[in-house]
Image (cartoon, rainbow, N blue to C red):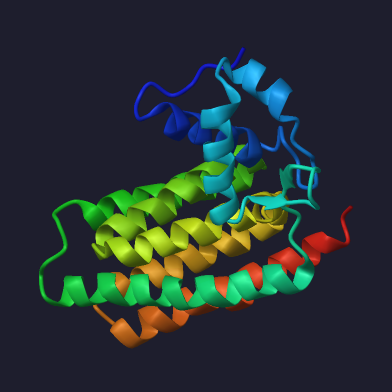
Length: 225
């Protein structure tokens, strides 16, 4: 039996637990969910589980099948994935521009840039070691730290939803050492622009990191099975 997170209502805890199974890959794209088995695994009744699954459907992680066939883990089509990259690029550019603006105004909390640079350095070491799992995990934390630095909750929340939908595809796209190195070089460049208070360049590099670099790495990974 899986352990539910300790905080929140029963349906919220069930939602977090199922989301964790999806984002870890244990429930792979296309997997049809057996509500009886899943409720037993989580140690709860089907009522709160169904509420949790409806929430995950709204988040884009699950999709409802024909009547009577229940829910399955959403499998993104290439056109859908391309659209996610387009939207994430706009938000990424906005987030980097916000950080640059806060630097220029002297409004960025002390230690923020040092923390972000330390994360880039850690990712560089992981890329050199070929540690794809470590790199991807730190990459997620780096982007979360960028959102905190930007100080814009709505943009962060929207970006979060887009990341969850594209999670498994992105993980595969960063599994190759050379793609990790290219990704991290982009991290360093956009962070340098933000640290210099160059709003236009920070926005441009933030957008390019997703719309050009990220999309290119995804396309490269498509032929790898």
